[in-house]
Length: 127
Image 1 (tube, rainbow, N blue to C red):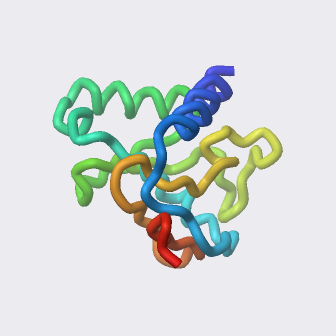
Image 2 (image 1 turned 60 degrees about the horizontal axis):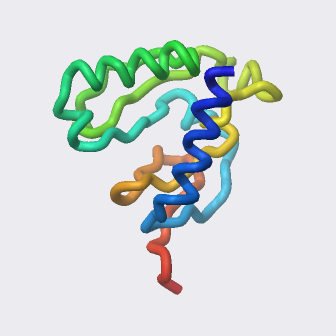
């Protein structure tokens, strides 16, 4: 239930906060997004250790994600899904909203995708 509430908050945020980029392409069904899930942070959260810990614990509790030790991007947290079996989702029919709606453009800045996932971005308004 908590996952659904989080998903609805994201849905309503999408309605009031326009995004600069749109997603193009298609999933190649390789599971790369589940092996390394990137969660973008605002600069304020990224610079505040207790907020970063809170966000990390939120994704552990709500989505059952396992944190990955990666400091390569200062405004991103990286996780692995514990429901992943090889490259297939073990709870596909009941997967969380964050997975159902992947990929989504970020609110701030251009999204970055893992190599081989099949998705890319286009600036909104570009032809």
